[in-house]
Length: 198
Image (cartoon, rainbow, N blue to C red):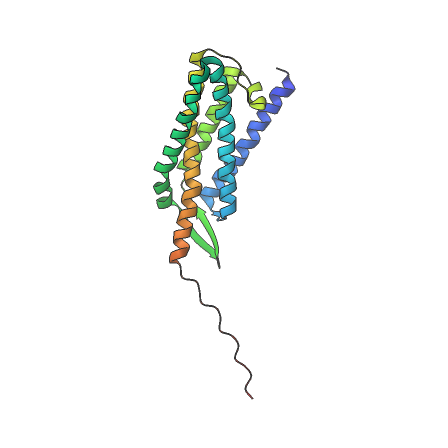
């Protein structure tokens, strides 16, 4: 692989990691609540996960045939279960503070974002070691022995858990905010000025 392609691959991963580190820092320090932003980042995590899982499934079909398509169900099941299990936990631990009229910020402990970040980096580290940096830029895994592919599938399943945690983070924060604002009374509107006396 040319050095320039390897450099591009590492830069792509580094940029994604920088975005994730920044989001982790914001979530711990306090991020402004915005439902569209939470939905956008949850979609970003799912698209990234889908691209990585799709590359593994495509390689598995090349090695194991159509029976490898069962991985789609396994990946989806792990993702859904992780989201479902983490959702009540996220709703319980998220902390909101109002920093202005109707301006809410939320904070979360380090556990969920750091776990995602570690498993995300681990996923790419395994691929780089096993397949080389080219796999990052073209998202296509070369043909490998089935035992090697099992290693990647195992890491993918862990990555499924961490992605499920981040989806639960987004949904849980949204639900907790809705519950909070439903309980928080809206301040009364200021009285209208009295008409001038005749």
